Image 1 (tube, rainbow, N blue to C red):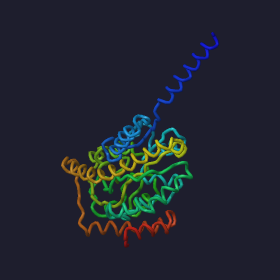
Image 2 (cartoon, helix red, strand yellow):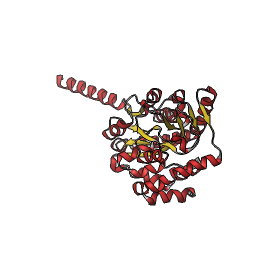
Image 3 (cartoon, helix red, strand yellow):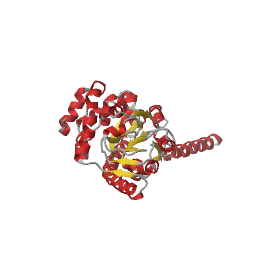
Image 4 (cartoon, rainbow, N blue to C red):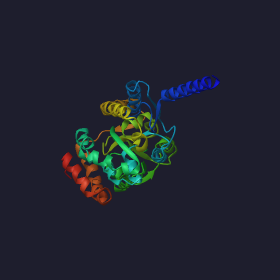
Length: 332
């Protein structure tokens, strides 16, 4: 009798413990380095919302913006180690990871507009690049836009010659390094979270960013000039740890893939509007000079920078650059 009662008690405890364990949600830590009100920040929050709703609480997405967990240089290693499950790093981050082909997105003036860009990110070239990440223990889920970059500095910059001698903050990218050197500027690699203070104290003279980053990080308050060059693209790839992703129950993974598709539509829809809105706010603030370029002036920037394509072809891969040219109709 005692044995039966003991067995019943043990069975009850086991059942309750198993049920409690089963009820524990799957945690996805989603780390990024920008503010919540940027296009990426808003898209991450949207993904969190619909992922949790559609999995009926079986998944909990914890979003950590503004480098709360990891800075630029740390986050990719953290993903590979499984310390976080999801990132959306800028496409410039993949060169240091050993997938140099991604640096084609850093090439100046390779895209003239979003239509050209999306032919690549939603087409075979974009898929081919994401597939290359799997050997690094990473799965690429999507591309998210931020926008086209503008130049800012502590002096008036209108033409390429005005960049000579300026210390310009860049992400860790050989292409961006070559871009600044082609302008006669001095590239300075620096974590995104450190840029505002570096601009404020004169450690660097200027930087390049889409307007949403320039505004949300208040960089425009410590720069004298912003020039609307639209010379390069800044976008992100949404990544997950491969082991974590493949270990998810199939139905959960399918649901999350659907949520990511919808979050990507949302991200790319708001990116241009957000950048336009933030640039208008920067202009209205009167805190810095905002320079629009004539077509002839922009052509001078393009002429000064397009040589970087040939310079970087051996690093990125001439074939894949040619594939992009074919998709977009690019002509030098």
